[in-house]
Length: 175
Image (cartoon, rainbow, N blue to C red; front, side, top):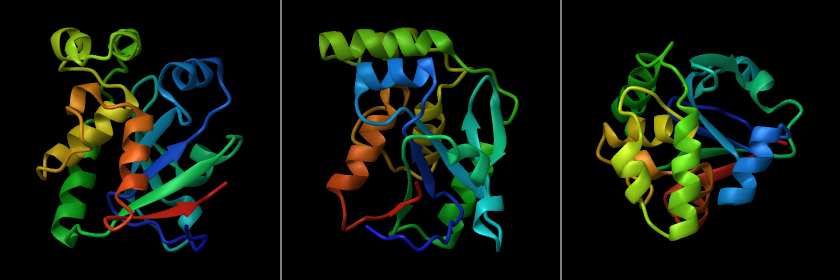
């Protein structure tokens, strides 16, 4: 695990939040509760923009994204070309303003409880996002996945996929 920070297009920010919703997500799915995509890296890394599904899909600085969390990591896919990185980042930015789909959290709870992907595949809205779905769908545009369908991906599954594929991902501890 690295501690040198150089965010790049399409890097994934993974956090362990402190809010009530974050704690509920962690209880349902695992250690981490939120993910976003670096879509505009800056020379001063903490100013880099992270596109993420909050109340809507929006840009937030990397600093604002990770400050006040119980932990944060940057996942850097080693095998992406510059064109793929830009494609993922630009696709995510085209989703700015799209509404958050709070119901999907419930569907993921049901999927987790019954060890299935049926609820998210059947009922999740194709026009709204939760954070992990935004990241997974952005990566799906370049035909990459995290071992689960994009609509069913959780922050934990994205994080664990990177941990289990250390040959494909560099992981930097941010907080």
